[in-house]
Image 1 (cartoon, rainbow, N blue to C red):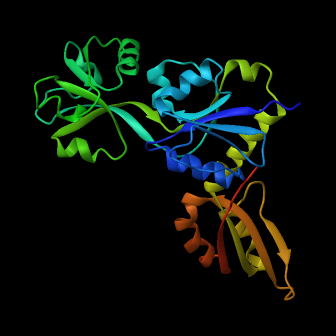
Image 2 (image 1 turned 60 degrees about the horizontal axis):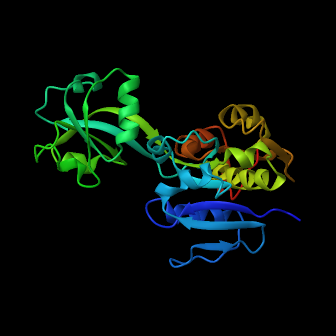
Length: 286
């Protein structure tokens, strides 16, 4: 009998919707509900556990869940040394140190002897200890940005996506101490006897994240331009070149980085490419 895997995912917060979208794009068929604590995936031997994002590392570490999707910042705060099976490419943020604009501090080491407010005391203390910084850590659960204004702290360490909230509160960043994104983690017990089902989940999710980073490019071009075009879009290995009815023309198919499309298109046109199509890739296994 096949053992049913358990995957813990966020039930709310900044990672919830994107995680659900990732699972759906990977081909999992399941019901989504704010009231449901767990559901069975209809087309795969997999149960989804909807839990607080902050609890996922603990549930995976103690074996309640075999796999989990959480943020690297939360792993660092929890201190669980769980194997990261895949970086998922969303939920990007940074844990940064910031001070009031009038502060003399310019670098992280300048926080020596100061009071630092944060909602991530464990990760902050660990990173400060690693860098030889002795500061008083003041734990706050909300409104960390206003701590200097209230006289609670001289500096803060907080999670940011854009940093706009810090600017509004008169703070300036002096260092990024941790970068974070959503990751797929596995329990040591489950990975000790890694099953085909586990590998299937990892492969399916990775295929979606890889596909999101790439674009499928199709174009027509003179056969004489192939060498130049190949230098512009080498593809995963080499572009596919297909002869057309007009023997002086070819069709070129290639996979390119999504972020490079903006700069590639003018170069391709200059090289003789035309009828260019750019398509999204649902899943990609290199």
